[in-house]
Image (tube, rainbow, N blue to C red; front, side):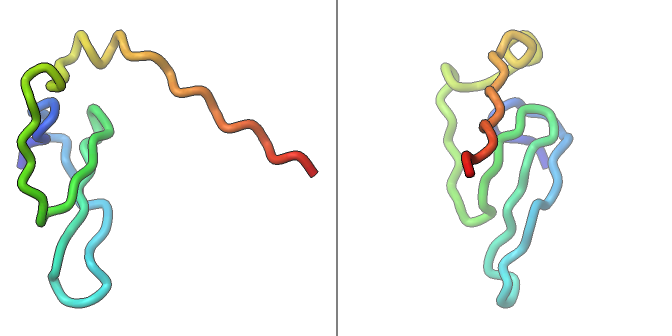
Length: 68
């Protein structure tokens, strides 16, 4: 299976539906994109990622600790 956003093959199952085999959630270990098996994924070319775009992405700041 390939990631619909970056075309990487580093995709794994994150979780499965609690009842039967209704759906699975996949996550790409390369670009961190996630999707459900029941979705019809159609990503526009302007939102596709490649190694260069991933390397130049900003870092998400950590959530500060809660005040007591």
